[in-house]
Every structure is written in structure tokens, then in C-alpha cells.
Length: 151
Image (cartoon, rainbow, N blue to C red; front, side):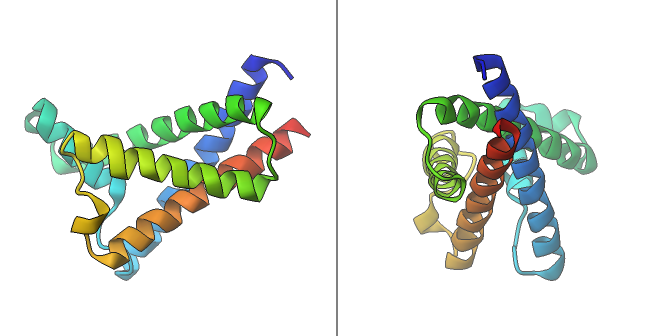
């Protein structure tokens, strides 16, 4: 399988992983288990930092957050597809590790550095647990889809 196919399989896997995260977050926020949808928080922070929020109503911001999250998921999936070319762990193990890497990069690194989200120690434990869970789900779904497409 060539690099383009690895990227494409990863992007498809990441898209499915992002959709799985989104589905869990929707159900979680509607049932009160999850307080906020991460894409909403991330988008609000991004929109406020860039001044884009002034031009968008809350519904438009929410739709944009969903679209951005799916595109970001596809991008992280494509990166996994390339990594999978050289590192070949079992799908579940690779997915769990990759989900934790993405969580660490986005919610302990990039997001707080940009002032978009708070560090985990500044959040309720239930919020941190839900964030970790959905990123483990993302990684596992992404890795499983990539492995299925590659076989």
C-alpha cells in the first residue's frame, strides 16, 4: 500500500473516529453525563481569540465547531495512517496509545498553550475522564478502521 493509500485510509479512519466522539458527546451532553461538548469549547475559544465570534451566531459557531472537529479528526487519522506504515501494533493497542497521544497534544499542550482550554488539573475530574474516554474511543475506532481498510 502506498503513502497516498495510507493517508486516505487514515483520513477515513479518523473521520469515523471523530464521528464516534461526536456521537458520544451528543448523548453525553443531552443526558447530563458530559457538561460541555469539547468542539463547542474549542471553537468558542478559537472564535474569541481570532475575533471570528463577532461575525457568527451561536448556531453557526456550533456547526463550524462540528465541521472543524471532523476535519481535525481526519487529519489526525491521516497521520495515524502514515505512522501505521512503520509502526504496526495490534489495532486496539495502537488505537489506545494514539488516542492518548492526541489527548495529550490537544488538551494538555496546544489547547492550553493557545488559551483555548484549561489544563486537566484545572477541570472537574468527571470532565477529564470524559475527555480521556472520547480520545481513547477516537484512537481505537481510527486504528480499527485503518486496519480493516488495509487488510
